Amino acid sequence: MQDNSTIEMRAFKHLGTKTKGDKVIWAVVVLLALISLLAVYSSTGLLAYKMYKGNTEIYLFKQFAFIITGVMIIYFAHQVNYIIYARVAKILFLISIPLLFYTLFFGVKLNEGSRWIRLPIVNMTFQTSDLAKLALIMYISHLLSRKQDQIKDFKKGFLPVIIPVTVVCLLIVPANLSTALLIGATCMMLMFIGRVSGKHLLLTIGVAMIPVLLLVMAAVIRHKTSESPSVISHPSSHAGLLVRVDTWINRVGNFMYGTKEDKQDDNYQVNQAKIAVANGGWIGLGPGNSRQRNFLPHPYSDFIYAIIIEEYGLIGGAIIMFIYLVFLFRSIRIFKKCPFAFGAFLALGLSFTLMIQAIANMAVNVNLFPVTGVTLPLISMGGSSFLFTCLAIGIILSVARNAERIEGEVADKNLET
Image (tube, rainbow, N blue to C red):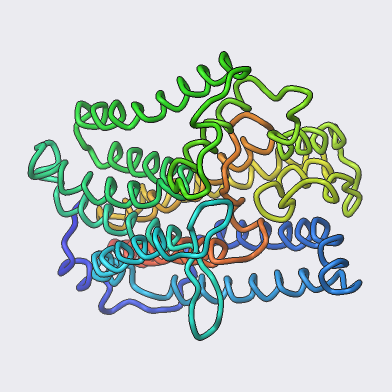
């Protein structure tokens, strides 16, 4: 693969503009959107009844509006030549850094974490980490494509790539550790595909594992000394980051050891999700028949996969996993077909992001991973994460569309000769 914007622009100059990209990915989008409508409508019935005085369809209509908006975003994003994304990648990255700073200190707080900023005119909130994640993958893909000749060199190849990743993850960590870890894991995988030295990657992983191991050790120590008072277990309401650290330790400890009978509230979400999975069995209770949606916190976002299993069984849950695997497989196919490095890295990096997020969400729902705040892509109830997911899919389809164009042009030339 080569990366040369001049060659790419010349290759696309005389080609048409109506190719729709990978049709299988389009089918995956439609299928997940339909599943989303059913799951969101089922999981928001009680909430809508309480909030809107019996109007249980309000969230269904809102989700339908998000889906229509998302499909429009996908369509317009896939019509853009993906070389344009290389040109705006650095700009978006530089914009995302001050936004993350602003969110960290002045953002909308929820559960002691500041993850959102409120847009002044439309009075809407969005997670700046979603924008930063998309901008970072675009920027890293651009850097990897430009530095293939120097990628094994620590100073000229590795440092320019790892520094942006480190900055973004450090700014996201205080409010959202899980998202920072997922972004870091995605970038590590992308750098591995991009031929970054294995020694450099292992060094980075080793450094990143230090705070993770410290959290595990803190959870073990707290469990062993749970009967004695602990300073960190009761931080001041003004402790800031200490409150988040305490939450992380609790979540890791609850995942490792469970909860005591007198402290079931500490693991309430996981316990209710387990009940939902147990209720579902193999074939489920049927659409709209979930019981735990009335007890499980956030059944329409973080724990929507547990509701899907309860209503459609383990078979339905396995089908969801299969759909995401099909999406990943088609994205890898785009990576292999794209003749230019930037497009290949971009499609693969964005697909890794969505796939890792989906795996993390599903793992939390079946208690294979500590509780996080990540949503299930294209299925959880609409928000900024839903729209940025659609933008990422549109960019992947843009790469697929242009790869097909070049492939068609080469085939036509071969026929002429």
